[in-house]
Image 1 (tube, rainbow, N blue to C red):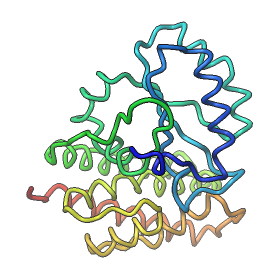
Image 2: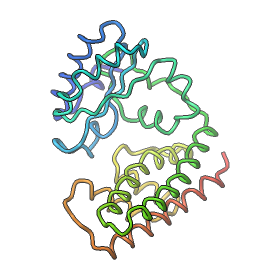
Image 3: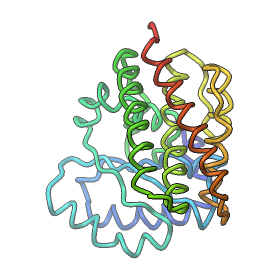
Image 4: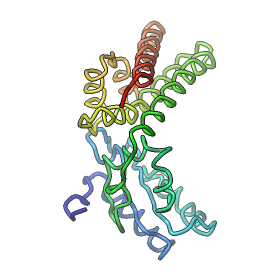
Length: 247
């Protein structure tokens, strides 16, 4: 990637600089690359509230490396740095068929700030991505049903289930757009909007639930039930659509 593309948004620069300094000292030659991924690079990022997610590519997963990364984790957490995802180059290569949804999302929105870019050159088979999308959407339906029952009428727990579902839908929707050879937005709401048009599905409730993450609102019980029903219907519609998809 060019130097310009590696420049991070100002709100995350200091946190990532601290992380990089720690890791270069602690891991030395075992650290092959550091890549920032996800919302920290998009308009969805909210300084002080959103987490900063990173992927580290290591030479080996030796326990000493895990201990080294864990040692400053509590201190770095104060800077909104989530525990990094650890991978090796071989792991990434062998995981393209089972984690295509996640790797496609990393490929779409990332900045490699140290070492070689681990995602730019990856390729994926549509049949593998389609199968993962179907599996994940159908698993989401199960989690929605179980979560609603387990909440036992607790509005806060139901709200949390809906927020988590909306957040998890975004990478799946981008993968579905990729399957249709449609340009993928990086932001959350643009993703929902484009997917709604492409798959003729109502996703307004998912957008509303996603906003609840950063809004101190307590939706009334009737609104939660309506939102649940709408999100469930949307996921069910998408699961049926991807099941019937011909590539």
